[in-house]
Amino acid sequence: MILSDRDIRRVIAEGRVRIRSADPPESWHIHASSMDLHLGNTFKLYEHSKFAVLDPRQAETFVGNMRMITVPDGEPFIVQPGEFVLGVTREHIAVPDDLVVRVEGRSSLGRLGIIVHSTAGFVDPGFSGTVTLEISNLNRMPVALYAGMRICQIAFETMSSPAETPYNKKPGSKYHGQVLPEESRLDQDIEFVTRS
View 1 (tube, rainbow, N blue to C red):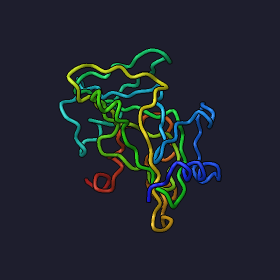
View 2: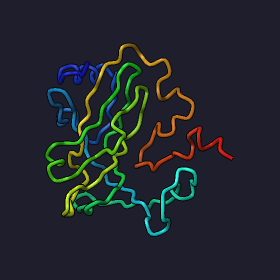
View 3: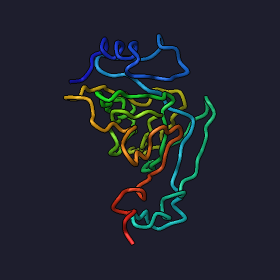
View 4: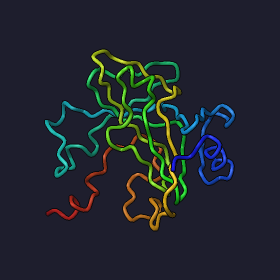
C-alpha cells in the first residue's frame, strides 16, 4: 500500500522516516502520494575515453573510472543528448524496516527528456543515505539542471511485514550511508568476487 500525504507526514513526524534537509520541513513538497527531493551539487561522469567497454568481469574498467564535478548553486549542469551521469539528492533519508521507497522522475522533467533512474528505482528498508540518481537525457537537445531544483519524487510503500534482514544489517550492503553519488560496486557482487 502506498502512503498518502497525511501518512507521509505522520511517519516523518513519528521519526520512523528520517529526512535530513537544509530546507525546513514546512517547505517540503509533499503531494497526495509522494514527496519531492532536490538535486545536489555533485555529479559523476564516466571517463569514456579511457576504456572501450565497461566490463563487470574487469573491475578496473569501471571502478575509479568516473570524474566528479561539483557545480555551484545557480550554475547549470548541462546534460548532453544521450549522456549518462550520476547525481545525488540533497536530502539524506533513513527508511524503517517495514517500508520501501520508490524513486520516480518528475513528469515536468520527463517531458524535457530527463530520466532519473535507469533501473534502481527502489530504496530498501533499513537504508540510510542520500539517493544516487542515474540521470540520462533522452532528448536531442541538451538540458540544463540546477542544484536545489526538485529532481525526483519518492513514494513510500508498506511491506507485508518488517524485513527480516534490512539493508543496514545485510552483509555487503554496498551503498549504505552514501553521501556522494556512488559509482557501481558491481565488483563486490558474489559472482564476480569468487571468480578466479
